[in-house]
Length: 96
Image 1 (cartoon, rainbow, N blue to C red):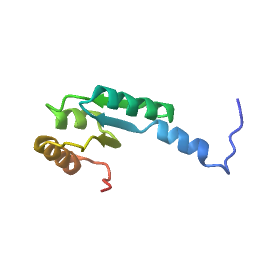
Image 2: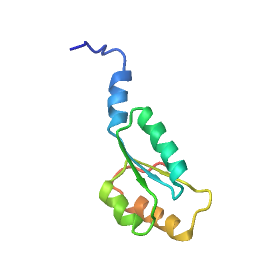
Image 3: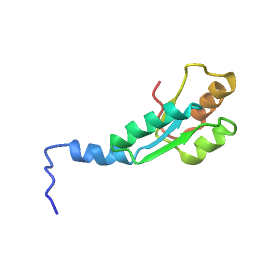
Image 4: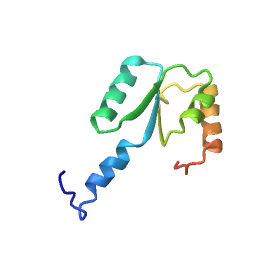
């Protein structure tokens, strides 16, 4: 087993980053795939892609994501409202 340099916070940061639950919300499968691949290449393992926004609030609350990546190029009112509800319902701190 390799020794970990405790003076270097990078290994611990990489481990905690890998444990982040990330949800990508995008109806465009090609764009969502590029984002998902990039996140996985960066070491993130818990990446979920949601293309269908029906029932979005329930699905997000079930997954309890730490990070949500959403396409806001052409947001519809329902998605924005559900994102607001997630923000209000979340037990995690929210950064805006």
